[in-house]
Length: 512
Image 1 (cartoon, rainbow, N blue to C red):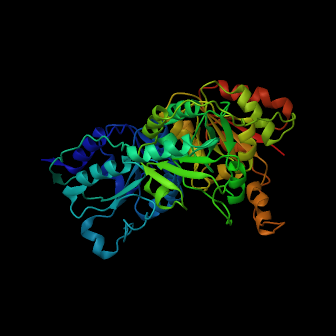
Image 2 (cartoon, rainbow, N blue to C red):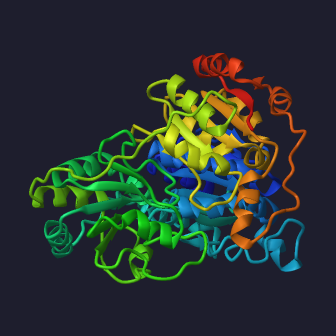
Image 3 (tube, helix red, strand yellow):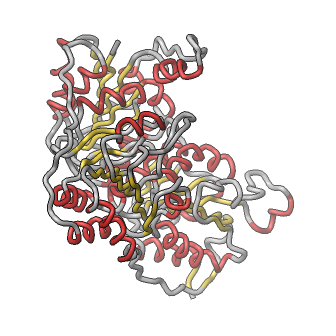
C-alpha cells in the first residue's frame, strides 16, 4: 500500500512529467507536499494554461497543470479552449473541496466539476473513491497523448491525497495508427492521374512530426504546398521553391487560390477552416480532393471528396514510396521588400533579417499576420507556434512554455491588445529567466477588429482604442529589461540587443 499522492507522483514520472504549471490555491495544497519536480507559477490561470500548451507542443511531452476548483478553472477556460484547438496534450488536475463537506455546498466547492471544462477536454473525471485517483490520472495521460492529442481534466478532492491506495499497473503505449494501405493507394492514384497536384498542410501534420516527410513527398511528386487556413504550427519551409503560400479562411479565396490545381490532398487540417460564411463549392470544380488526418473530426466533416484516417507522417512516407518522380511546375510564394517605415511589414522584415538562425517565432498579432506571411518566412521544424482557436491571450505565456520546452531563442511577436490579456506572464518570464524576446507590435488599437468590420458594413467599432499603453513600463515593473522603439533609426539596434540577450527582454515597437 502507498498513498494517493505518492502513487500519483509515480504516474507523473512514468509519463515523463518534469514540472508542474500552476497558481496555488487552498484545495491543492496537499498535492504540493514533497513535489519531486519544479513548480512553475503563473499569476493567472490563463497564463498557466498557455505556458503548459507551449511547453507540451515544443517539448513533445505531456504537460501537467494544477488549478483551483471552480474559480481557478474558470480563469483558465479561454486558453483551455485554445489547448483543445491546438491539440496540446495537457493533464489538468483541479482541487476540489473535501468529500465530507461536499453535501453542504462548501466554500470553494465545485458542484459539477467535470461538466465545467466540457466540451473542450477529451476526458473529465472526479473519481468516486480517493483510491481511484492514481488510476484516473494514468487514464488521463493515455487519453491526452492518443492522437488527436488534447487536454484532459481530473478533479481531486483535497482530502484524497493522504488516503491509502494500491499502486496501479502503468502501461507503456505506442499510439501512432498507420493509415489504411488501400486509402493511401486511393490518394496516390488521385495524384498520379493529374497534371498539377497540390498539398495543403495543417497543424496536425506538425504535431505529428511530418516536416521532413512532407518535404520528401513534395519534392518526389512535384507538389505545390499550401499552408491551411489559420495553421497554428509550421507546415513547410516557407523559403522552399515548392511552397505556394497561405490559404485565407474565405471560401471564395480558397477556391481562387487552388483553382490551378486538379488534385488536392489536405493533410492534418479540416476542409476547410472558414472565418465568414460563404457559398458555392468548397474547392475548385473539376478538381479531386482527399484528406489525410489523425483526427476523425477532420474526416467526418468532409464536404465531399474522400478521407483516410491515420498517422500523417507515415502516410506521407508511404505516398513518397508509391508515387513516381515528377518535376515541380507550380508557382513559388513570393516575399516582399517593404520600404523602411514603422509598419508591421518592415518591422517583421527586420526581425527576419536579424533573428538568430534557429530562433522560434511564437505569434499572436492578428493585424500583422498578413504582413508576416510575406516578410518573415518560417524555415525550420518546430519554428512557429500560434493560437488555433482565434482567442487572445495565448501566445505571451505560450512563448514561455516553448522556451522551457526547447533550447533556442524564442521571439514572441505580439499585438498590443493580445499582450494585455496575459501581461502578468512577464513575471513568470522574470522568475524563470526564459530566453524570450517579446516584440510588441503596438499600434494603439484592436486594429484587426476595426479592419474586419468592413465585412459587416461598419465604419466604426467601439472599444478598440488602446492609446496610452506603455509596455516598457509594464515590463520593467515585473523585472524585465525593456526598450521603446519609436523610429526606423532605433529598430535594428533594439532588435539586435534583444536577440543577443539570454534573459527575457521586451521591445515596445510603435508602428503605424
